[in-house]
Structure formats: C-alpha cells, structure tokens
Amino acid sequence: MMGCWVLNEGLSIILVLSWLGVNLYLFIDTFYWYEEEESFHYTRVILGSTLAWARASALCLNFNCMLILIPISRNLISFIRGTSICCRGPWRRQLDKNLKFHKLVAYGIAVNATIHVVAHFFNLERYRWSQSKEAQGLLAALSKLGNTPNESYLNPIRTFPMNTTTELLRTIAGITGLVISLALVLIMTSSTEFIRQASYELFWCTHHVFIVFFLSLAIHGMGRIVRGQTQDSLSLHNITFCRDRYAEWQTVAQCPVPQFSGKEPSAWKWILGPVVLYACERIIRFWRFQQEVVITKVVSHPSGVLELHMKKRGFKMAPGQYILVQCSAISSLEWHPFTLTSAPQEDFFSVHIRAAGDWTAALLEAFGAEGQALQEPWRLPRLAVDGPFGAALTDVFHYPVSVCIAAGIGVTPFAALLKSIWYKCSEAQTPLKLSKVYFYWICRDARAFEWFADLLLSLETRMSEQGKTHFLSYHIFLTGWDENQAVHIALHWDENTDVITGLKQKTFYGRPNWNNEFKQIAYSHPSSSIGVFFCGPKALSRTLQKMCRLYSSADPRGVHFYYNKESF
Image (cartoon, rainbow, N blue to C red; front, side, top):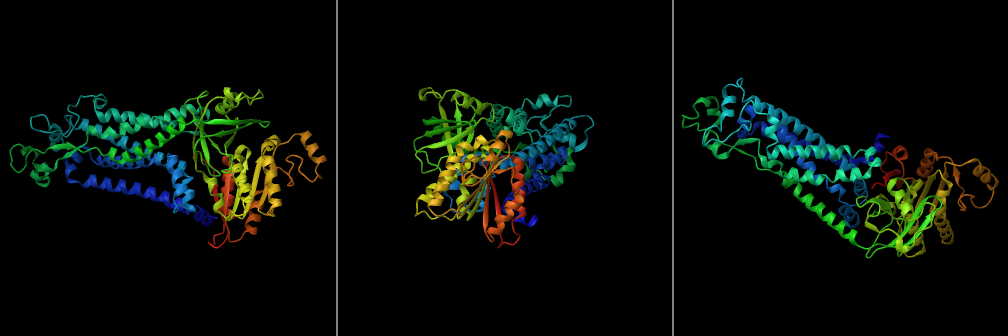
C-alpha cells in the first residue's frame, strides 16, 4: 500500500522535499556565512550565534514570502493549465494542490518568523547587557564605539538603563517588525477552518492585511540595526592582529578604530516580482468585476437549489471549471466559488446554488427562491462574476477511464461534464481518449435528485440511440428516507423505471461499499490509468484516497487510480 501511495503522490513528495531542501540549504548556508564572515566578527563578539539564527531565518522568510502569492494567482494557474503543453499528467495534478502548497508555505513563514523574532529578542538583550558595568574587555570597547566624533557605532543600544522596547519602537526595524508580527498572527489565526465557516468576512478582511505585511517587510531592513564592519575598514584594520589590542586602537597605526555600517535591505528584491504578478492578477479581477453580467433565467428547484443562467461578453469555459460570484446587495467583500453546470456548447453559463451558509441563504432569499415568488428580472440583484478558473475536473477527458463521485450538492461540477459528454456523443467526428465513465452520486434527500434526473435521462436516451450504453455507468445512492417513501418504493420496485429518478438504472439505498466498487473497476480495466474525481465532504475524501492507494498496483504496468479532489 505504501508503494502505491508513493506512485500516486511521488511528484507531490518530490516537490515538497525540494521546497524543504531549498529552505534547509538557504538556512544552513546563511547560518555558516554569518558564523564565519570576517566583517561580522566584532558583531558576533556581542551577539554570539543568535546573529546567525536571526539572519538565516530572515533569508528563509524572504524566500517563502516570495512563494506565498503564486499559488493563489488563479489566472496564472488557469493559464498554465490551459496553454502549457508540458503541463501534463502528474504535473497538472499539482496545480489542483495550489491551496495546500499555499498553506504549507504559510507554515514556513510562521516558523521562520518565530525563529527570527526570538533570535532578535536575545540580540537586544545582549546589546543591552554589553553596555552594563559587568561587560568587560573587547565587549565593552565595542559597545562604547560611537561615543566620540569620527566613530561609527556597532551597538544600537547606547546606554545600559535605556528601555530597549521603547528604543526599539523608535526605529524603522522595530515598528515594521511589530506590524509584520501582528499582521501574521491575524492572518494565521483567522485562517482556521472554524473562523472561515463562522465568519467568512472576518477571514477575508484579515487576509487582506497581507498588503500591510508586504509593505512593512519591504522596508523592514532599512533600519539597519544589525551592523558589520565596512570593507574599507577591513582593509586597514586587521582583525586577527587588532582584536586583542582594543586598548591601543586609538594609538597604533596598524589598528585604526573599526568602522561599521548596516547591511543593504534585500527583502524587496525577493518579493517585488510576485507582488507585481499578484497586482496584475487583481487588476484582471477588477476588470472582470466591471463587466456586465446578464441573468437570463432563474429556476428555483424544490430541493432548495437555485439555478441561475447568465451571459457575459467574451465568456469562454471548459467542463469542470468554476467561477467566483459576488452579490453587492449582500456583501461587497465576499466572493464565493461555484462550479459551472453548463456545457461549453451552450450559449449561456449556469450555476446551481444550495443554501449552505449565511451568504448563500441570503442569495436565495434575494432571488425569491425560499418559498417566495421569483423576482421580476429588473428587480434581481446585480451579480459580478470572476473567472472561469481551471479545476481538477477539467482533466476527466485526459484518462481512458474516469470515476466521478459526488456527494449531495457536490454533483454540480459533474453536470457540466455530463452535458459535455452528451454534446460530444452527438458530434460523431469528435475523437475521445475517454472510453468509460463511472458516475456515483450519494445523497440523503430524494428531492435533490429532481433537477439532475432530467440531465441523466436525456444522457441515458442519447447513449442508447448512439449504441454507447456501455460508455456511462451511473450509480445513485439514497442514504435518507422516511417510512412513507419506503412503502412507496417497495410498491413500485418492479416497474421498468426507478420510482425516485425515473431512470432505467434503479436507485440504491444506503451507502456504497467502496471496496467492492473499486475492486470491480480494477478487475474490469487492468493495466489502465483511472482518474478518480470527487466533490464532497472531507471524511469521504479520505476514504476514497485510501481506496485509490489500496487498489493501485505496485507494478507500473498494472492498474493505477489517480485521485483528484475539487478544491477552490
């Protein structure tokens, strides 16, 4: 099973290890440079090894801040997915893990920021202590530099009784460091799943503190608190000869007083490119926000699902893509992702929205879908649409066999896919690599099948007419029913069509036995690459991932299941 997991996740493991390797290399290389660099010899006399800890973590912090914005540049990821011919197979699946990588990099930032802050707390205390009466010898001599004309200081803490916290907050490095730390704490704590679900607006607002974070990071190094000996001073002042003759620095010609300066700030060089890239991303989003969206049809389904048909100039999509929707009448800040349920061949694009929170409930109410009369077209609230963006499901057609699994409203991504299959089957000239689709839908409410059953029925009819009944195997599972429904189902069990959906394929009652399902699929398609696509809750996602690992062959020539989960 471990071998199958490595085969499935091998590239992801390599990428994560590469990221860790770069972080370790940068940290270790920078650490030893500051431990051995001659220009920081006198700085190390005061600070010790915490100088290297602070500087090494700072470089890793810059590296991760360079990466953090790239995974959330949706347009860039969609562009790479749609146009790059080299982005195939396992490389394409990495694009679906962009949010996981974003979170991983965020943890890297948090760890390195913590090391950096703690190291500088020790540095400040050592700077302060070196001005005390207990400090003797070279340490005291270095701390007193800067008290007379034509001398540059090494110790930024000038007197021992000085309040280091107050003095620090008078510097650029101190103020920006505090702002960076507070911004990071706000962003990290509000990103927890509990807060995102309880208050999306809080998550959205605090996440946009990243603007303050990056501005402060860019100017943080301008304070130049940590100082090293200048190159001109090194050429005149031989450290090996002069460090033990600190009492003679003023009198011996070979040992002039060493001169110090702060290191040039470099954080802005690391983050400039990604920040410009992300700024372009936001400009594109703003431009799309300004484009008019025409709502052409509103359908309120009995299962509490709102169906919206829309048109927008220049809008092009592919099956499985999603859009971000904003309704200013509800919130001018919130953008919510919804998978497109229309096919590219249709002259509109559509989404199906179920009330699953405050925002979606308010949207259904605004459109009159909560048991009210539907609004007149001119009274409908204005919607803004950003996208479409690529998602895992767009890769369904790249496998010879695909297994599509939906739970509840998670069926919406597969609506566009099944419609697209219907159109492709109608076009005899369209070659398809995809030769078999297994479709599973698990739902606890029988009413939820109503809006989707018509699509399945038309697809079932089309496949029969084209002689391709083998192409699509669908399995619908109802996990919740009451006593009246059970009696009705039992009375009509022997009819040719299913009593719930009206389809020839009968509905199953209960939950699928995934061991049996995967075993049968693996047996039917030996030596095949099988894409498994899922949209639904995390618990079922973990089960399906386990099944993919369990039933994938360790032999490269055997059957392999590749797991893909919809994530926005």
